[in-house]
Length: 101
Image (cartoon, rainbow, N blue to C red; front, side, top):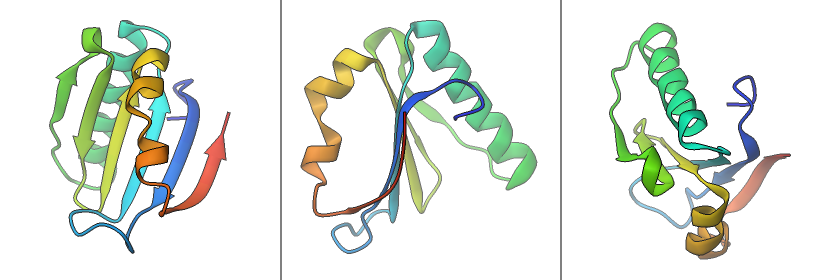
């Protein structure tokens, strides 16, 4: 995500508070095109590097897209939607492992 210029990247370890996944990656894209590029990049990475086909749900125009890689769920947000949904606050009992601006 960092290579594709995602902003405010956070990796949360939620294993202790979640039964459906172990980690959240949350990041911002500054435009619809950027959100689409980030999700495409993740699809390509998953296919080539971990041999997994993934679907990305949501629409860049709504400002929130999500990809499920089993143990990792990736959230792509517009800045406004990220602020509105406040996932980091909802999952504050998880451990913040990485924060990149």
